[in-house]
Image (cartoon, rainbow, N blue to C red; front, top):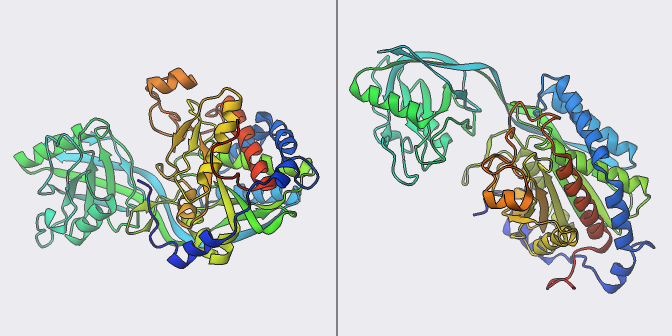
Length: 506
């Protein structure tokens, strides 16, 4: 189910977008776009956007990361250097460029966490600090919530920590550490409830079903006042739970973090000099990366492709019929909750951008294209499935037609089923949306391996959100296919508008 941004857009705004006249391909515009047949210009643009040129932008982003401790997160010097690179590249290519500043909650981990069992037996656990954890050094009794499920239910259903009453009462002067199981409510809810119940730290462990049994990272979603670590594997969490049920367990938890709820960052917005400003094609990608790695695939690849497409439009002297606006979002990977109703994380930049537009401005955006992780090493050709505002299915069909004409298979994907998809707020604002995605942490199936090549049972991108997402974590073939497809479709939309509804011509 698509994540909804209930706070984002009023009914009046959605209505304004829906009522705006959308440019559509006609016999006249299909034949000519400012003197150059659109299909001719689209092919020329696609040919000029080479994987070698896209890789040059990737190497620039990688060098920026290398010079900034492999970090390009918003609020850091690495992001600022990347933003200046993007801005300079677009200015040199003749675009009107502006910076859109905004505040966001900044988080950084200063040192690895510690989770040690002190008694009855000394044991050191491997874990991670939850994003937006507080800093602290706590030694105290481990107390499980009253509704931990060991063994787990066949399907995810643990409500551990979802209510303040799940935490046993804390005595005067005590500093207990809560043991909480993953389950049916947000981590934020569990942590805030533990804080409200008087607990000094929180240890979270995985629920136990297949696919929910290994150690993983996570985010609180907003700044916590206490240390939060996990997720421990189900086996480690169950061992601690059983030990605590048998007698007192003393745990030592230490985290070292930095939180700034009012940090500043920016979106970089560039517009073509030509094109009807009453009809705007939006091309966008996240510019930042998590602090855990340089983010050269996720989403340096989308940034690099968009930059090269923008440069080649200028180099070829192509004059679009409709305005093209490139937006590179900051703070998309902050892992902070923006919408309290849905628990959606990240998307600070695209949320701010959508909120900054009036109903009339939103109504002028007739289509949006998102490029995300298009260099995944074990990729699948995912095309956003058109399950969005009217017009989205036509964008999907343009991409499918391009790939099918070259004998390349595609796979539809729900456009908001993975964290960090910048198109979420724009979809909810009523913008017809499409895009390309190479895959992230999910495992490639045997059927996908048979169709697309690569290795079944391995993540599309094993370095997703990790330190190894560097210049060596790219598939040049994927970059080439996705970038050239994006160039062709972007120009067709800019020159002709949205195709008419109905089946495509044979």
